[in-house]
Image (tube, rainbow, N blue to C red; front, top):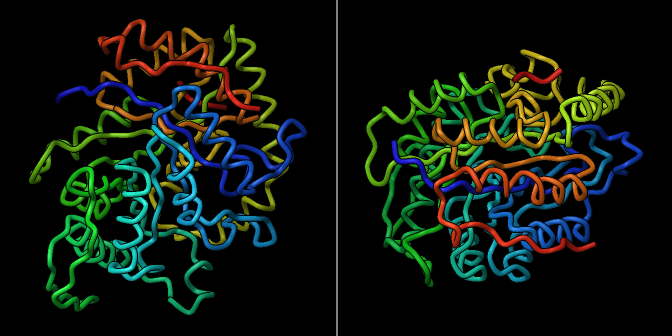
Length: 368
């Protein structure tokens, strides 16, 4: 397996804090203004990517604010100059012709820095209450497979005629296509068997939820061994980071967030009730105590600066190229990571010096 240079990204705060909603150090804020400033700060600090999750209604509590992913992505594309912008998409919410047109528009606004993250939905009310309906797990993936087939071919500028179970597209072509590369990248999330088959056939990058190194290595080995056309599949990992000068300080910070997260038990109960039990991400999340979403601290990026840097290098050696990171309080800890961890990782990596990000001042129980 070819090991590509490391990249670091951040989760946009589209529905507020990632670990605990009742943290006095980070009041709830999912506003456009905060997310704009956060992504601009991340770009200035040298981060390579941002992921904007898509929900039409807040997945935890319906009276909480929720940023809209695709309008935010378009605005960020115009405001930034270097950082990759990844917008998540749930296929049932957009016809593939419309979505492909939106994606190409943001691709050209960003000058070739846009990507889509295909997720096949876990939040039942989001689709049910809209009258769309929430199909069974494997049926959602079958729909998503057909959907991404249409989207991918249209994003490449192909004149498409396609007849399938769900879509009937006739002599359709989109202009302009990407002015900078063949098409935007396609990230795919999900760890079930249908998800693995889908990413092997249609994805460029597989997003893996945070979990211990040995589990991640097994997932990578399984999917990397599958036949596919085109370039080798690349791999990303979600992780919540808590790092301090000493291990003891990091553990104390972890315990603080874990205690705060317990106050969100009513919200978590709502989320569990609304979630398809067949979603592997949610099954994995139940294996151990952790903070953060999408695996959170289960990846083990909790510890001293040297410990966290070493664990990142171990994941990189196993095949992880992109780390999509969460923090709390986000802005301060994002800056700490950029100043303390990224230089340590690159100092021990074979990446050429001119490939490393330039750092400038930013704008204003886990398992090992």
